Length: 282
Length: 249
Image 1 (tube, chains in turn brown, orange):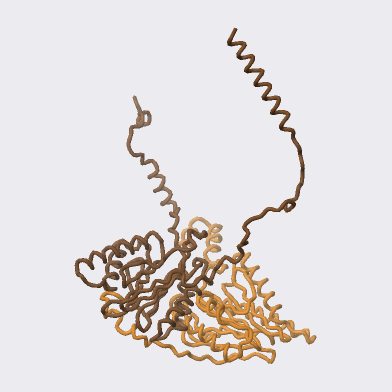
Image 2 (image 1 turned 90 degrees about the vertical axis):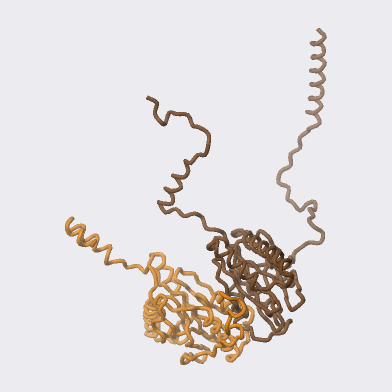
């Protein structure tokens, strides 16, 4: 009798690992968690509009993957969005909503409103039940005035006068809580945002490098890329590398006469070629 | 149920299971906890500050817990974490100071010595898997020398010009790092600390609006009575936030 185990394997999918995976889960082995990218992102409302700020470090676990990335994403000419969490998720979700807003602008013939972006973002994120790991600070100025919102990965939103998100949010929030007041001027707003981002950069390991700032007012948006560079490379030699003779200690010197051996080889080959010719001719 | 089963098995196994049930004499998790402590050096000495809350999990159980105490003539100690372990630490320290006084030789234990003693206790307990579940801040002045150090339940210890435990590390240290100076007067130092305490009040769920500040200088120690800080909730954006965006908070 032919047993089941004796039959040759047919083509198709192999589901061997499924039982193993289930066994591991039953034993309590957990899947590795998703990596959280460190970030400090902030936003505040000042007298004429909204100021957004972000650091520029993108991390892959303990490694800095990008020293100068852009975390303030374009949504509409009058709406910008800072993103913390998984970089791919923040990029994708802001790009998607930005396109949707543009189509909506063509359809309505009007400037986009911040609540539109907010509703599109929150309904998308909620439908993915928190698996799209995007924590956003959304700010802009539209016909109804300046608005600042935070959006969490599960889809909840807050409307706030000042907000921080990311791993450096506590450091930045400590600056805001102690120094924010109503009716800040544009310069004061930018200064406070830069100070909050710097607090995140210097006190949180997941944030670093430079400060990006975006100022949105009625009719005008200023994207100040690398507004502050508080972490310059200070030890660059202008000459580059130079290896002076005598800089490296000599431990052992061994002279090998290569020339002599090479000469022997050439003669040997000549001898072999000659002998080969003789052999052929014979 | 454990005991019932083993009674059927025999008297030997009853002893064993009883032992494992009753005698879990290791600290596994904290019960009544205090939140952050902040300590800074200033021109004349050291200031420690904390709130007076003792939380039982997520319940605010005790509202008048003194978490900053004097140790001898030259030291102040502030504790966060398990309150009962802090009381035990105070017993050890009071005994230490008593024996030192009994020598009556004109010498007294300074903050460095007390810190070292505490560090030994904490690290030893941690190695026996039975920690005193606290993060402590020690501040003191002896012969004009200011001292501010910290030690925690796993034995990590270090000194600095400004320190904090728990949430204070995330919320207060950034402010202190940018605004602390060597030559702060007492009033300026208290203002700086109040700034940090206010942020902690807003953003740490286990803190309350009842704070205590203690000061130590070469002249002596003063632990001030508890007081409250003024909070501000009147931002225009806090009024009716969902007006422009339905469904938001």
